[in-house]
Image 1 (cartoon, one colour):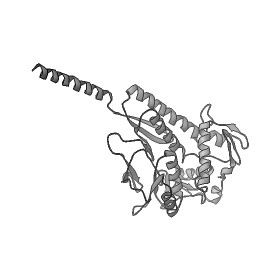
Image 2 (image 1 turned 60 degrees about the vertical axis):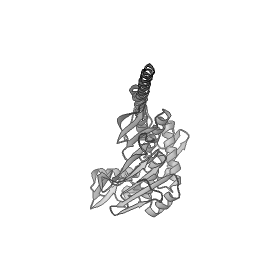
Image 3 (image 1 turned 135 degrees about the vertical axis):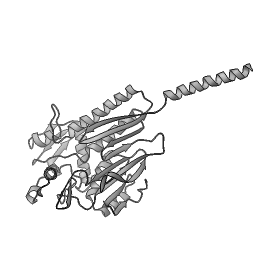
Image 4 (image 1 turned 45 degrees about the vertical axis):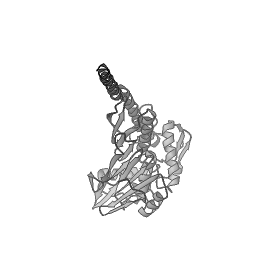
Length: 331
């Protein structure tokens, strides 16, 4: 009898110890909202860290988005910061300036992918984007050829390490890469901090880690014909899902959609599709390719993606026509 009581007591103690251990190591979900780069950003993470540790992590994430927002902002100046606004609007032609190495890295990346995309991804198209932004905001008269005859020659950007020089009033626009770049940094920071289960939702740019309580994260892709709904889903772990589309910033004039994604070769908005979504390992590369594939003809884009094992893509041409790369099997 005493032996049975002893076993029961020992079992109760063991159960209590197990419960105590499990409680201390239970994953909890934390969430924080930010607003940078003209985008509402939500970061969710699952961690055994306590709230004060997570709060410190969120502060670091806020710093990352805030600092890169200021560096890449082309519309606002900030005291003591040489940013894209300064390079575009203040720096005289031919005068060199030392820029933050973080900004230099993004500009260098943009130049690299200009060459890799035959000039279709062009961070030097700021003057042209400026013309179309004004039109989209006012939505009255189309720009004429003289309005569009502005300098977008990337060779007028000279960058040697962190020394920057511009010529012929060239203007930068990093909008097609900056958000993906910093979102990739945030994901890497979380993993370096021991947090592997997370979702970063930065508008059309989503990066996820490894789902801990299910097989995968389910990411809905916006239906361009009805942006309050989704038209398909992807089930992913450790991936980035980035969409470029004509439903985000646009103007409809004479029943034609003029959106913010400009083909630097034609100097006009792309009009042969409504959206492209890229699924890849890197948020940076997925961001770049979502713009590049949106500009490319679908047939060329499909051939490109099918030959690249690191990315998959889905094209929403219209409500009746959806095109998937060969290995887009995430649903």
